[in-house]
Image (cartoon, rainbow, N blue to C red; front, side):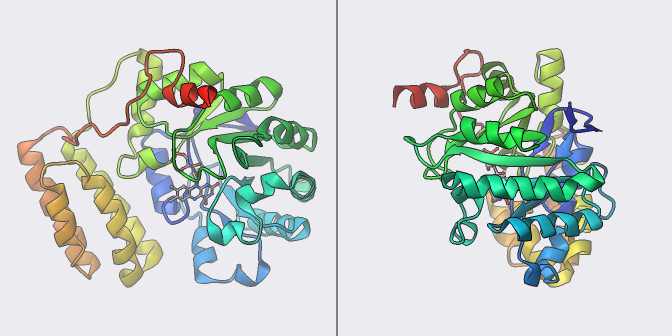
Length: 355
Ligand SMILES: Cc1cc2nc3c(=O)[nH]c(=O)nc-3n(C[C@H](O)[C@H](O)[C@H](O)COP(=O)(O)O)c2cc1C
């Protein structure tokens, strides 16, 4: 699997998720089996580049190559400048966000809103590709299937983007209008794959090794991108890699290993955010980690009252120590959504075709 000239260790990618896939989380996912991770989106607005939020998002200290930064905006020149700025700060791949439906992005017609304005979308792609060419930095594009059911223009836009020099396209199998509701459909992703020469990545609702295999088979995609299913379960990348290679699911991790991974993640997290913000923003990661484990909900409520990193860290260690005594293997309930693991047609896709 390559992105332009850059070779990746495997085809399992971490989806960019604002407020989630910061550097500590990306590092953890890569350690546990992800071959590639894209940063949270960074705004193209120059006046915000020096803000604490953007500086943190552009922090790649200790992250293994390749460093990929996602940029979001509506002005081709600003987007080109943002690409250059991030390359100067270590980006080896630039990803253009045309997939995010968030209000903050879409109010200015950025993110997935750009899919409704193909001429502007293409001018952005051309400007960014041109800005990155001197440094030989590949540019990738993340998009949805279209604005709404009746306007699925992913294939047309992806083709034009490829002609303009895009090195890889990721498609989240939902329209902008869907936000995160309903189920992802994979037929449009398969059509994009069939239409392009550059690698295509399938994204949306991949939450188990079996579903990963079904989506790969259905779409013929070159790689898979996983977002929400990695929250609290960053070892899902290793699980999927194992299943794709051996055809059987591997046993859940040792609880002691999960304890160590989470402790290291928290340490890294406090280092990036500092004590106050670190404690607050770590709560969601801890909450996801203990979701579905015996006593997890009670622990999460208690843990949310702790206000220092030391207290939070120790509480996590103690809870997972006790859990390990009872459950040497990670006991989380199987919260995977029902999937058409062994059929040729993932269920979300069937629904979309009936519509
Ligand atoms: C909390 C959250 C934040 C997200 N932020 C971004 C973002 O910054 N850029 C982007 O392209 N997509 C963003 N997404 C979309 C994801 O990258 C992904 O396309 C989507 O979640 C579908 O994949 P999944 O079903 O594996 O989660 C975000 C999704 C979530 C849940």
